[in-house]
Image (cartoon, rainbow, N blue to C red; front, side, top):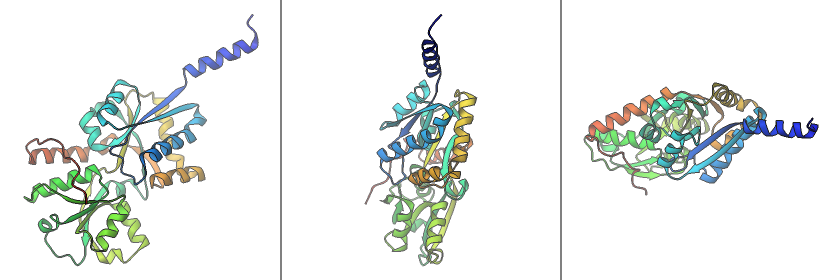
Length: 291
């Protein structure tokens, strides 16, 4: 008969071989949260480990500087969760390979999935003139694609004059102090700015309100086990109910986390179709010039 300690050791080894893993790939080129790539990777690791370790789930987060390589590793199964932007996900991955993931936001998801084009209330120029001016933006790729499409629709040369800033709050302030003609921000950020400074509601006006999936999107592989997938989603939904969870969420400038639907890519996919039709299948756009 084998000694008891041998049986225990073999049992532990066997369990470790079958330990569930969440293997996350971050597209560092397209993450626009106003924090460093290193801190974003660390934050994601801490966030997932803090809540999944209780379920005996190991989390490994890898940062990629090449989106194509990230998508290849996702398709091959080397990673089973991806964090990128909607454009790269649609460009490189078949939608059929995706399952819902997690997303962070402030007030509600629709606010963070709505792009606003705002200007000053005293700016009376028509839209086709405004869009030729200085555009304050945090560099979001989907916002960039929208603005290029808007320029083409208005028969304006596709050459946005971007003032690229760290976050949406800075974009709003640049507009407020007349250092930009237009700002591209999500509605959630605008609501926060107005709450902190009510005068912004009088000094600024919304020109357009566009439902679009902005910022970083996160999805899992379609073949992730239902049990593991359920644990990841459950973890996301309960993060903000603990002090530790709230603290970690602050790293991502969010207050809540919830499940992200694959259908949330539809608005960006439609926008990409519009842009490609207007440019007769011109290659995907690059970020506008910086000031």
